Length: 95
Image 1 (cartoon, one colour):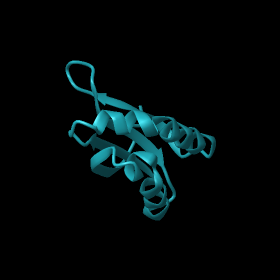
Image 2 (tube, one colour; image 1 turned 90 degrees about the vertical axis):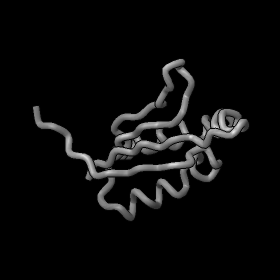
Image 3 (tube, one colour; image 1 turned 90 degrees about the horizontal axis):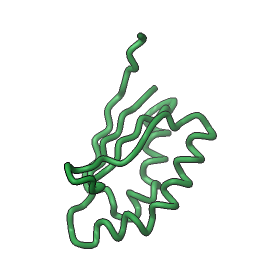
């Protein structure tokens, strides 16, 4: 099952510092997801000035249990980078 994740960063003064501190670990996790076929697409959400304000990912997991196990351990969650996370099942258009 594909899932689309929109995750928005905290907006306090230390938010960007926390993001940058755990970013390498988040990327390592995304690379691991890619190697197992769970990572489809992802990147930073930007404000109109190009500042990172969150993330978008499309991931592929057998079920919500696998998705939630991964998500609960992602460095952007454990490192208090993402404040609001919206996860929805996603169906890719067959075109």
